[in-house]
Length: 266
Length: 295
Picture (cartoon, each protein chain N blue to C red):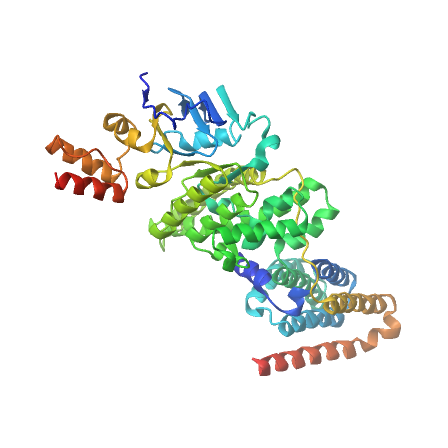
């Protein structure tokens, strides 16, 4: 995973979603998560997924980079579905829930700088936990770079030679062991740096104000509407359950229109 | 141990007329792997407004010395005083007055954009947003890197990262600036600019600067005083750069190769006893050699 790409997209992006406040985006993501938890209807879930993809496409987010990240959980969900789902539809529901939730999270991280997201989380969790989450920010980049360098070094020193699986396994485990020790050392040094630079037991993060209030409202209202539909379908399946295909069709049409518009613009 | 101290009438580290900013007296630190650094032999003294270079081979204890100044290490023996306080005990009382650039600047840059990173310290100290912005822009301008303000730090070159880290250290307008190997990774022009900047800050704002370096050739241009550490941490020599680099035997004890001009003049004097006294700047060397040539 190229976390520098995630960071660059979040920091340097100029779409309307980037301009919306972090609080609105986190609220919308929470509502999408609630939708994923509440729904038991495959069409509603696929509609939610289509809406998220439409949002990413419409905002010009790098979908090619995002989709592999969003599909990671599908692998684990598929194993679970294969082991426990009573029907194909249930299996689709399990995998769909994993992918939709992940895509919501990936959109949030591609459109919001990490510290802004965790500054909100910081208000809801104990101080030390919030600070720890924020402190991981640079450490992730340093560890990713270190891992890349380690892998290169191991390759150059023939540790990952083809046809030598045992040797490759040994070299990999040694490298990972080294990386673990480095990460422990790094955490101390990062703490020292924070202390030298003014850390007083509670990190203060500059909240970036919203530059697009209309977008704030749109994403929260949209996510709330999605959750409302999901609750209605869940609580009154007899009355509305037969009509969910209309909702699904509309969202897929939205996705198509968004994709075509974007393609013509580009 | 013999002290190889050469006293300048008005500009020596022991000058009682200057306010003492840093004093390290015979400090010992033993690391967990058993490596022991004993910063002894003579006191490490820095006075207000002075620029001091710490020289020594790898493993001599330069970083250990700086970490004691920054309160990151607690002395197991001896005493450390910085701005009148013990940094390991009273860091809170002095930290706003100290700016730091560590050796690995990658680990020092912690925010998602250059602007946010430079603004980090004033934000943590709770300064008003307008003042944070004003200080941050001023620090970026000082380093001439305002155009990097919205860049992502991990996309910067090594030299740019070093400038960002320095801007982050200068943003609080510190009285004492501590730099660990600040010239590493800088091209010659950036190095010369950094030396000029540090000299200007020291002169205009009376800022005290302590730095460790392997880049011996920068010392005559930069430092008022230099300290030489021998392997194990012994402080074997101190004085002005001219004094320090004229002690070839002690310099060799510290595994340090003298600046190329000092070496040139030393060899000339080996060949000809009438050769001129060492000059450590190119301009001074030209004048000295011309005077010698014309008799």
